Amino acid sequence: MLDTAMPLDSAKCWDDADNNICRLVHDWTDNATLAELSDVLLAKPFAILVLVLGGFAARWLVSRLIDRITRTAAAGTVPGARAAEALTPVLHERREQRARSMGSLLKNITTIVIFTIVTFMVIATLGYNIGPLLASAGILGVALGFGAQSLVKDFISGIFMILEDQYGVGDVVDLGDATGTVEAVSMRVTRLRDVNGTVWYVRNGEILRVGNQSQNWARTVLDVPVGYEVDLGRVREVLHEVAHALWQDPAWNGAILEEPEVWGVERWTPEGVVVRVVLKTAPMKQWEVAREMRELIKDRFDALDIEIPYAHAAAYGAPPQQAPERTDKETADADEDRPAGRKA
Image (tube, rainbow, N blue to C red; front, side):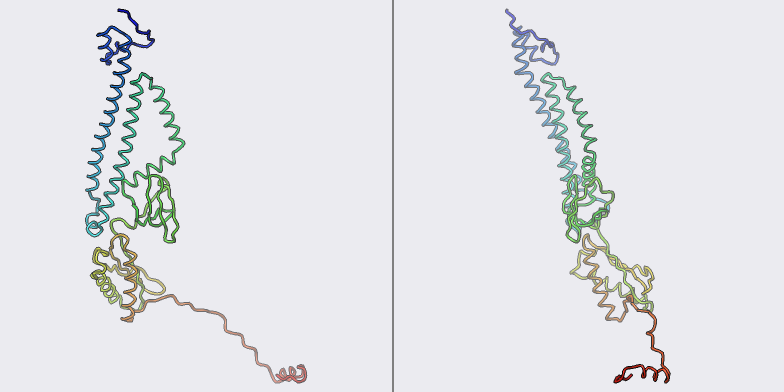
């Protein structure tokens, strides 16, 4: 039989122990051309198909694992959150949203990693040397790492902020440079609006501390000034009665989580004595409770004639200067010097 195979500079496909199709065709036909065509038309496409299907299967398995972890995280509780969850139904929904966000992020990362690996394996299957590609990818990764350090830092910080649930949309937070209500949280920046309506964009990598005033529960702290002559025991009783009545008010059911406490004298001031009362409230309710408490305390103090001291301003100065009395001689001399027709 005439061998019509073209001479090949590279190794023969039938010499590859892993290429069973090429070797099998060559053994059957003893034709190098058919063996090479079977390698190009059957063996390599089949290998590529197996790699692609394997990539999809790996992605499906990893996605199932991530979904299971996500459901477990969504059903879990954070310390101190169980009691608040019964009074704040949005807590469970917020935890689910955070879990779904992290699950989506992990799925995207795993998809990129898996199919990047599959792509390199397909290139290697086609007979190309992937060594230079890996080296180029490494150099490119190092260059991007140095050139986009701040971007990577923002991205990683955003991941941990979402994972740790440091804050979410609707929370009132203090980020150091800006304080306000969170309107959006992305992997790179956090957008919040302050009380004046100004929108602030804060890079996640630049956030060194987070003060969240809306997480799990909050506290209303009121410092009530009274005069030094007022009976402090009576003041404590009145403050406790007012706070307890507000706690029992059905209109405020769910806003105040626990029975209020009167902590007592907080400090002395030149105007009077400051007594502190505190109320544990649901998130975002501390300011409403504080305003209502101030109004109720003012009305009750007025009814009981309990004085609320305030700073008094007084002007001090030298008494007005009075003109010295003149003697009779000085008066007569002044009359003589005055023009005619004018009298003193």
